[in-house]
Image (tube, rainbow, N blue to C red; front, side, top):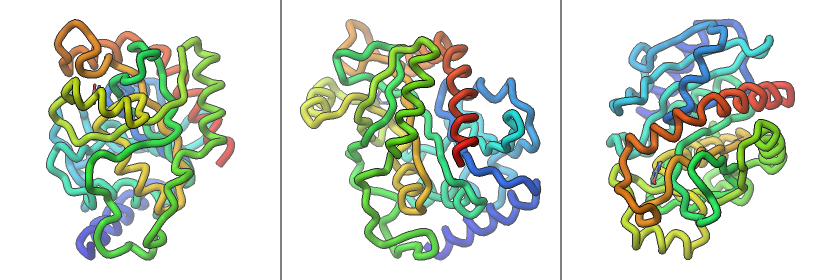
Length: 277
Ligand code: HPA
């Protein structure tokens, strides 16, 4: 834990030196959401490998950059590409970026991801605003000595996803003409996609969509008192629900098709979050 805290401090010191601006909103862009940054005015753009103490990522299609951008006068901190448990990083390492955000003064964190639909009423291209999650990975970033400077030993997880932010996201998403749901995200380790039997189990448990990210970051943010909004783009029908094989390429194809609409939603939503903070 001491080593992780040192890495958090190092990364914070380095990032803080890049700009005097004080962003209050951060966004982690999941696969398929990354194109959003191309239309933004960038203040700095750091490769994860340049940031002392930061983890580095290995997944193809997840280019890793920490960007400070100006969105109509609001500084916004953006992670383009995220870290995943399935890459072999420890849960404690996955906590580093969000804790660095906390030290930088972030109040609101928008987590985006691609997910597979478990709920039979969802179709690829829909959006699900995360109302709650189920952690099927029997591990989480708070295990180990408590990082007292960030939060309490036993945080309450009943309201990780801030209600008010969910309402705002719902209005913005519907306005942009995307079918939008409120649902429960179930976190799996991956990298193997689920079996059909696992998906049936998850449906019985009350999950609406499944993915391999977001929950470690949401738990870390909850512990640190950061407001969280989670948005899943439904990229595919979950295992066993479609009549063809499930591949990563399929997931990326759906993301590409809906990305123009997604970008519009993100711009409006992040602006609203910044104005609130
Ligand atoms: N399962 C797990 N993770 C995912 C999926 C899926 O079907 N689609 C996108 N990420």
